[in-house]
Image (cartoon, rainbow, N blue to C red; front, side):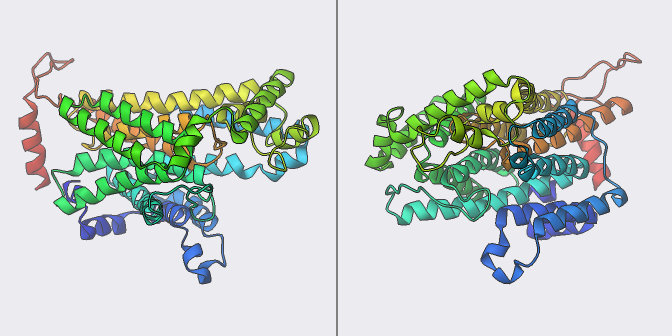
Length: 456
């Protein structure tokens, strides 16, 4: 793993080549989904490459020697959520609309299980998260460059990303909320292993993600970014000097915001966009009250709103409700909403579990605590930004949850393996009593020396 931590291209490629074809295909899916090479090279746009990659991953999975059956309650909640969505679609007010969009969650259901089943080793996880970050670097640097070349000016359309999930300015901002905290945590972790350029490249990616959020003119994402920065400061118990630097950077960043963008915050709640969203939210709550169990139907919010509130449309045609909880509540009722909230809670709980397990074990992947913290901060960004945007069935939560479950499974197996071998040690070197024999174990330094010698 130490060779991978250096981000040496030869070491990364050598490890990647050793992996199974199923892992290559799930990586290809991630590459296609985030890099979108068909948009750059139009000659490639003759096949749905993301679906091809997923299909090949499914076919190759039985032959993968490292595939694993992951036991986690998130799997049950995901399956129940899928069942509720299918029931809601069958009993929808407009079933044709539901079945037209049925793949919006089924897609993530398949991807979730493929990721947690294939990404089952520390090496695979590190390669996968590195590819995830590399793909997002492209989006982050593009967004930051766009805002800088604009002279840090304001544009009503914000910053448009590539076609697909991140084309809309608010959606691109949300993806940066999912990316920046993980890039920040990984940069801090690999700092002792990498050259200074690599460390600052990772940090620059995180900063570019923040700049993209500031330039994209999404107020919800900007609020979420501030909350993420505050939580990282609290979680890491940063020194007063560091907090002062962050505060100064925050003030400077606010000064760079265009006057028009600051005016949007001043008129929040009273401008036309805000009023339309308030009307959507009010209508969504009424829909849930009238259809509490399974909602009005999967993706039935817009047609139902068009029938009952045709005079409250400021932008020509009804949109989605611009709130993840109202979106899921109208799509799948209170039953689906409860399952959705449980899945979000599982994301946070597993991230905390990873850090607790790593705190009492010296055999877990060294990168796990930091990445778990980044995944949790990213999830908070999704929840906060999701109060103003309709992104319930976008990759944000589902990829993050899959990564968290996968990492929790890897850490859990490492701890259970130590317990089975009777070699569990605490990272701080405090000897522990052997439960069976009552004998004390050697300090962690001796254990690490032994493992290093064995590796050499």
